[in-house]
Structure formats: C-alpha cells, structure tokens
Image (cartoon, rainbow, N blue to C red; front, top):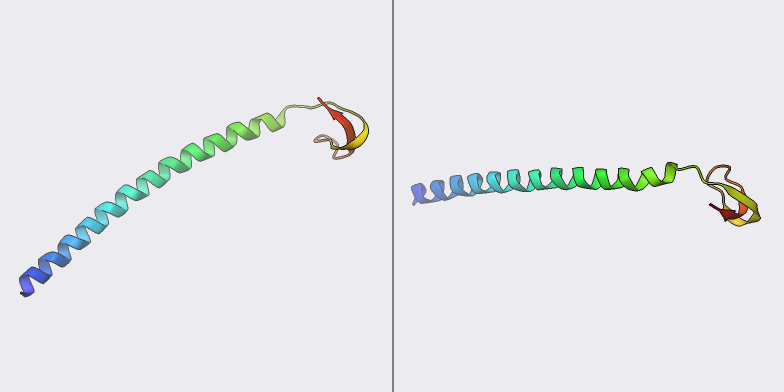
Length: 70
C-alpha cells in the first residue's frame, strides 16, 4: 500500500511539473505577441498631427483645446 501511495505521489509531482512547464511557455509566447501589438498601436500615436482652431478637442502636440486635428 505504501508503494502504491509513493508511486502515485511521484506521478502527480511529475505530471504537475510537466503541466506547469507547458503553461509557462504559453504565457511567455502570448506576452511577446501582446507586447508587439502594443508597440504597433503606439507607433501610430507618434505621428505629428496638425491642430487648427479653438474648440473642445484636445491637441496631442500642445495639450490645448482645438477645433480640428489632422
């Protein structure tokens, strides 16, 4: 009985370690994809916009209120 319990415990530890390793690799791959996506989205924010007029929109360059942003 002790042999069976010991063998079962070792098997559970091995399967748990194997499962943890696979899940950890998937999380790292998703993190790389997410970071690349965020970088691609933020690249569009660095383009110089032109702000015209006085209005209620926030100008990304001067942080003032403008009418049009191109």
